[in-house]
Image 1 (tube, rainbow, N blue to C red):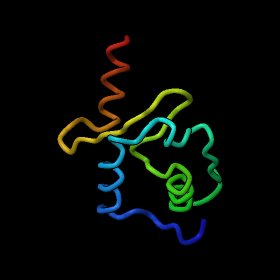
Image 2 (cartoon, rainbow, N blue to C red; image 1 turned 180 degrees about the horizontal axis):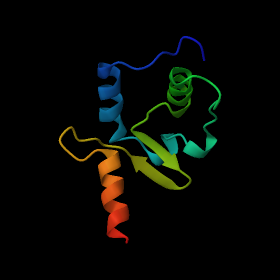
Image 3 (cartoon, helix red, strand yellow; image 1 turned 45 degrees about the horizontal axis):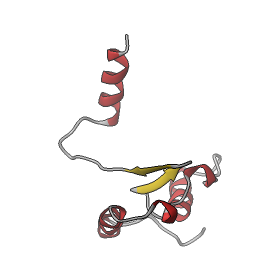
Length: 88
């Protein structure tokens, strides 16, 4: 895993654009990802990226997952808080 490195903005944009047309069979199943939980965060990130191939398009079992982020939307923490408060 040495030398994989983190992706720059341009590489991430290319992966994001490619995720739209990625067939389910081409996606990596997140259940098959193995990360060393004792490793530093940067190493864990490299391990994840090298195994998942495209962090914007993967699968979880039989479900195809596409990730999309908005610079103007709620943070994940805000969205989760709103969700759980709505369930009270």
